[in-house]
Structure formats: structure tokens, C-alpha cells
Length: 166
Image (cartoon, rainbow, N blue to C red; front, side, top):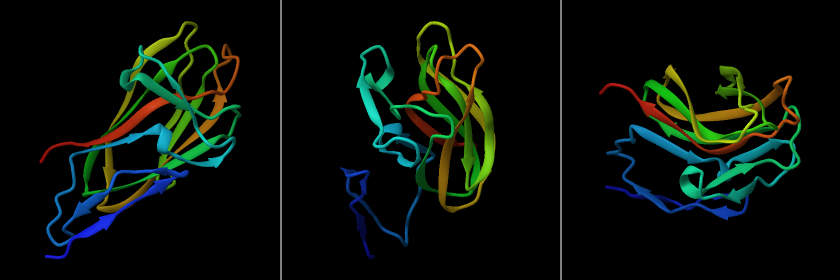
């Protein structure tokens, strides 16, 4: 049995060591990812974060300054299956509209994170996403803003994919 070990660094921040047996691997049903560890594709970098005890995990992260077209990505590995994508963040009066892609296929279009008053712990869900086994890329792109919004910020805490069924 050969064990593989990965030590990752994303945007200069170390990720935990991951050890596994590649010949006998059972991937998790839940694949979580903190937005803070996303890789910036376009717009300002690195991602900034705010400590806020009202938000789950006591934090949220965002690109600053924000701009239309800002984008980021995360890489993940999963088994084949049907998944629900959950995105958690903070709605507010300066938020943009979000498009989400998996492997460059749009899964969410113009998801609106605007709200006149700050709303913590918002979870937006997209069910029935079919994903093949292997490595994939989840990408977020700011695509405009609500007419009432003052800016293009996207303050997210984390996202996850949950495999449905067995």
C-alpha cells in the first residue's frame, strides 16, 4: 500500500497535509472549501478577510477593491455523482451578481447577493449538479450588480458540494 502526501500552498497560505492511499480511496460526500483560499483569476488579489462573530466560522472573505468581472477559482476532486452546491456568505447593499462555473460550464447565473440591510449566514443552494469522477475547477465570476447595489463586492465564507444518494 503506497501512501501519497500532499502539502499545498494557495496564495502563499499553507493548507493542511493530506495523506491517503491512492489504491483504496473513498472520497468524502461533503467537499468544503473556504473562500479565503480561492485563487484569484481577475481583479484585486489577495483575497481579504474580515473577522465577524455574527457570520458562521466568524469570518468572510472578498476581493478589495471589487469590480465587475472579478473572478476566482478552487480546485477539487470528487467521485462521480449528483451534487448540491451550497454557497455561504453575507448579503448587503454593496454586493454584486454571481455566476458559478464547474469546468467552464455555467451552473449558476446572476445569483443576487444584494440586500438593503446586512444579512449574515445566507446559504444559497443549487441542487442536481452532475459531476464526473476526477479533478475539477469551480469558478466564480462577478457579472454585474443589482440596480440598487452600490458596488460589486462578493463577501463569502465558504462553499461546498454534497453528493446526493449512495
